[in-house]
Length: 150
Image 1 (cartoon, helix red, strand yellow):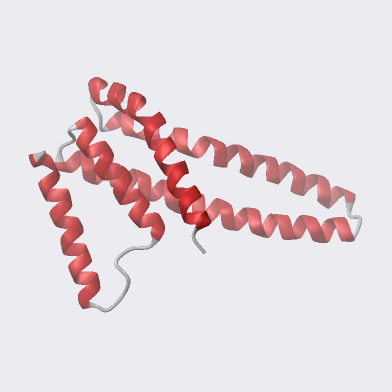
Image 2 (image 1 turned 180 degrees about the vertical axis):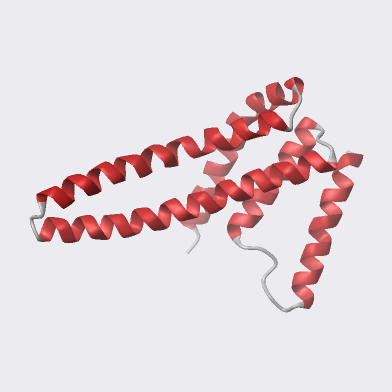
């Protein structure tokens, strides 16, 4: 539990600085990532450096996910346009790119957790494997409850 003190202090300091600058503390994605990091830090008893490294891995994954979502949105619009124009070669090209984006989106979480191999011990990796299903359930529940809020 004492290993949580520094990350929690950093979070509180960040919140205080954000409040002092009169802007929101964190975006929903950042709050979710912070929650995941804290849960993993506690369950795996990570050092401060491991916690920072894990946070960076998850931040990079979140940024890439946002890029993929934006790219997919643009691609979908292009596909609609190509369909309206009956541009078969363009449609085929966009379908192939769509499949590539879907594949990358599906593999992104696996890549993120594979990247943790470099910072975690074998025992910590085993604990993470056991923790992931519970974290996924919690994230899904939170997403459902957030979606139901008007």
